Image 1: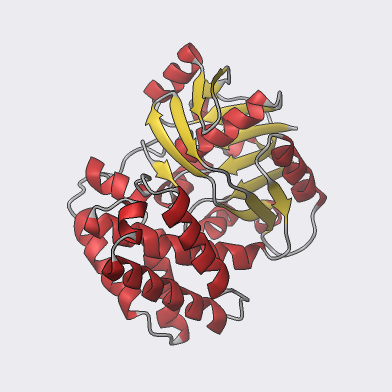
Image 2: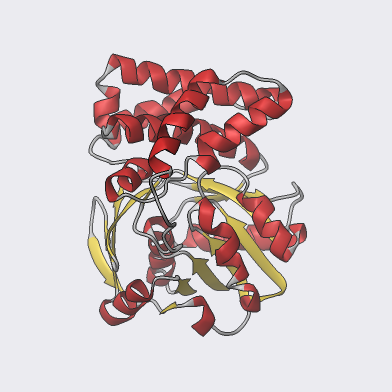
Length: 318
């Protein structure tokens, strides 16, 4: 199976590196020329709790990549989804599957506008990965991936891609309940990311502060109320378990939104809290705490005069 990872940031490099390590046919595609050159020159370094390895993996600017791929896995920030997939249209054939397990909501709809809904698969992951440099990433703890076809039907291409990802040790499952898992992850990210971005606290520091924990709980519950009103089966117990595990195992981790604030980059607040608030307003559900954090992080984003390329330095997950 020939796979292209679109967006060689933290998660994209990690997933691509694990596939390459398992001898899969995989390429990284990024808009950051310096990153592409560093990966091709130095290899990709992956640090984990148990080992550090350097892996040879081909990296390309989209304009330099050639041929048709069996699957494109889009792992840019949501704000760059449109530009990223537009730059890779020449790599997509009649049977190519385009998978997103990016943060937030709305990415699958953007992809479908370019490639058609029949080619789009959705997913979520709880792998926590930090980008250390252009050619180096570090993963914290373990994680998994869930994927399914965007329109809900069982697709052999999804099953094949799940098997390939699972064969690289990424704990991937083709799961009919993926949409529920996505909303539970959105609840987690809307809470942890926005609170961290505003308070400049790591995951562990949020867990140690009663007021921060209360904000996290309020936001998560608001997001899940929106999902429930939409008819999506979600579990507050699962989200609380995800939060507790993060507080316990990812204490030193700086969530991606905090990393963006520190670096002066545009955040993913619109694709996460913003998308939730928009949907809440559409269906008549109140989400005041989620909206308050959205407005606060927007104040940071308004100071940004230009968006970074879709290969920007970032962390992924909480």
